[in-house]
Amino acid sequence: MLRIANAVLARLPEPLHALVLKHHELLKFTVVGGTAFLVDNAVFYGLKLTILEPKPVTAKVIAVLVATIVSYVLNREWSFRTRGGRERRHEAALFFLVSGVGLVLSSAPLWISRYVFRLETPDVSLVTQEIADFMSAQIIGTLIAMVFRFWALRKWVFPEEKAHPGRLRLAPTADATDEAA
Image 1 (tube, rainbow, N blue to C red):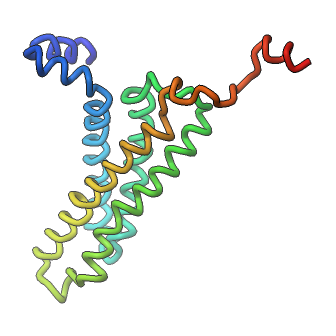
Image 2 (image 1 turned 120 degrees about the horizontal axis):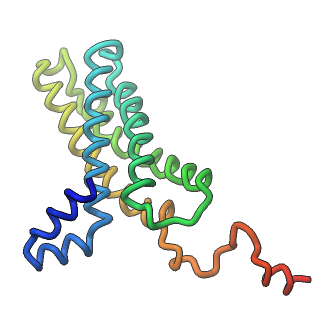
Image 3 (image 1 turned 135 degrees about the vertical axis):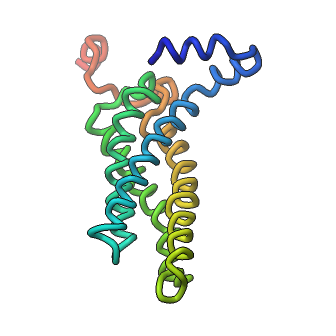
């Protein structure tokens, strides 16, 4: 996979090559997001069209939770693998906290569409309901949550280590314990 990515990168014209290198985290985050989007859609529609037909918001919440787990693993191991420095438990807790806010942001447009604008059967046709669900949950909600998550993940979950020069170390160094004594 890395070999393919390097081959594609080598064939890009210089201005585009430099731009890709400059924004490599954003591009990786976008690929991870696309993967999570596919997982989200598959779970959302799988549940919404079967066992959770009368509860689309519940189906969306479950879909986002599954996609969030996939997203954490891929972001930790690929998109932001050179960032961080936190204990994995702390990092994962922050990731899921940020994703919880993202869950609210991605579900809110669907909730508004269904329960404020009443874009559901029998008030509207089934086709209108499905288009409204897709646009509000899968497009608008996903875009809002994506922008928030990219900003929050870089700022709090996977910060650059040098961005926190005064933070506490996980374990004291030999020099620090000698000075304290």
